[in-house]
Image (cartoon, rainbow, N blue to C red; front, top):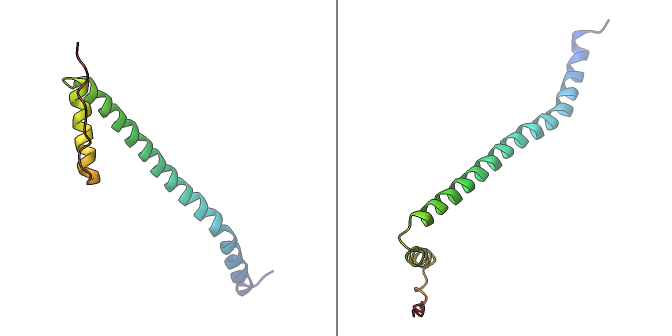
Length: 87
């Protein structure tokens, strides 16, 4: 029969061996959750973009609005846009 003091060392060794595996599982679950959240956000943004494009008055107005927005966000001047030939 073992004495209580001898078990203490083996419990510590077992804990040290199992802890990395448990941490890997835990952080893998967290990363998977973050990945799924990003994927859902991207899908929702695409859905909203498609809805906005569908509801826009014209394709040209929507394109100009996005060019202006991104030019402003990037701090660059608005590029010159030629009017399409009508006729």
